[in-house]
Length: 230
Image 1 (cartoon, rainbow, N blue to C red):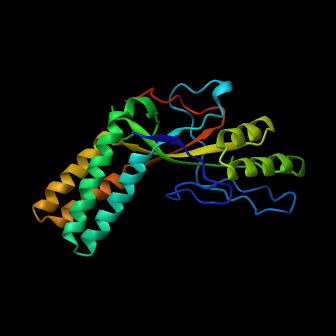
Image 2: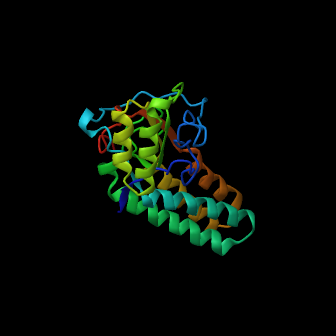
Image 3: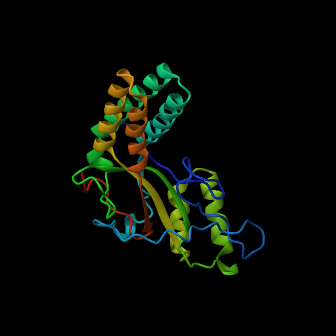
């Protein structure tokens, strides 16, 4: 299983658009205003958090989970369009990706207070950073925000977060999590239902995977330790 630390570049929406990204400060008048999600409150960490020297180490995400989510969506669309073979293929692809993700679940899983599947391993599959709710960027921080913007553009994501943290720019990490075991059960059920010709029920089984996604928000000094659950 390949994992990565992924941050959306400043001004670019993350892969599934599950959370706002950090835009450059508007205080200097040279960059776009910050886009925030005022409906999402900061979620207290549900497990041990990383120490201060680890704070800039953003969550590792699962490429397999991210791929599986795209496959699930594609399978649902195929069912809607009456493309049975395509629906079967994408469902099987999603199941394979989830099985791969489960193999390394213990190394990247995180605890969440929003868990609905007791005992399951919740794996992050998409992340972004944004200004914390209520934070107002000021002109004196514009330089560091622009520096972080350049670091992100060059792919040095961890350094960008550290730059913002040391400059006391109040940012949060937004993460999308998926319970891998329950999701695999839903996908396996969908595959059997498709084989039986029960397409409506198969669509509901696949929808259950999308409905299981949990969105958490962490303070930059409150990133949970991975591998602490599942």
